[in-house]
Image (cartoon, rainbow, N blue to C red):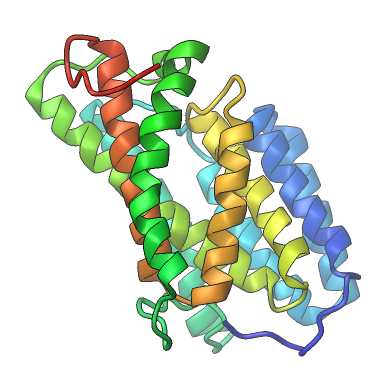
Length: 268
């Protein structure tokens, strides 16, 4: 992960917060006009402060703007499956290609493997993640009624698309929020300010996706932990493994919530 300075300052935090606030307005409050205006203002302030900061927040802003061009509410119909997949793919590919081809840098990378061996605690966490998901997710989805934000699926082809979609979105989360947003923010901000900014964008997107009610109390710690783990391990493979293990339980819990006789393995 590249940084511009050994000890980044807090000055770039102001426009970075503006970018995060625009995501909250766009995805959380779903006010596109105001959200895009706030995004442009935040990016403009970044350019006025520093060219590198302006370029990096522009890349993040482009990704956010692309995602905001369509609804990402859960839908497994073929048109929505293709539409959402194309938009999310562009939101990752566009900042990456601009970074490589226009800016001629390598600020956005996808480091699959860590240069160091995982600690026992990091390995143990991989085992703990599905257990924690089993304990927490059914209670959240069913008690809050949030499972209804996902469609009631019984057909095999829909279940397959839903499973693929859950894993695809989980993979995209790490590519965009962690390897793009967080990595670019870390070029200008210390670890935890950068992490809180990316987590705000992350949680805002998940709200529109369907994690509502008291969902942010679940998704915010997860987003912060993913940023911290990436900063510690510098491994996309590790944080992606964590995310997909968690998402496997998400899939099972939502299917069970809609069809209580199916997968009766949960306690809630």
